[in-house]
Amino acid sequence: MMLELTYTSTSNISISTLCLFYITYIYIVILVNQAFVVALFYTLNCLDTSAQAMKALLKSGDTEKIVFFAGVSRQKDIYIMAANYLQSLEWRDNPDIIKNIIGFYTKGRALELLAGFYDSCAQVKSRDEAMRSRVRVIDIWPTNV
Image (cartoon, rainbow, N blue to C red; front, side):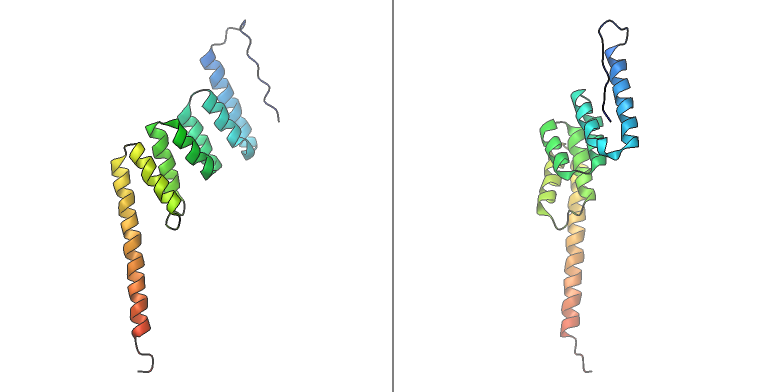
């Protein structure tokens, strides 16, 4: 499916109406085929609607592109969206994701969200420690009583 939309300067359509038309058309294309999510991202990014572009990119689920776009966008909302997405992944076993979450919340100046993430990290660590102590108690418990 090719995107063949043209704009002629002689028509009476405003640029904002044309942008809305492009966005609507691309949303329809996405509903037809999910492979066009990245195309929507690039189109919205060119139209300078970074928040909508990030939402489209989040739907694609491409973590590498999400981290890259958040790093170059330099907008608080984008940083927070990227950190929230990364927190929905399996971050406990991946130090790179943890580092990106902390960095994005810090750059986005979302200190309450950062505090909540640190709280989640502490809860995970305390659960892990509790599990280790239970394993140690089971290991030293006599089996032939």
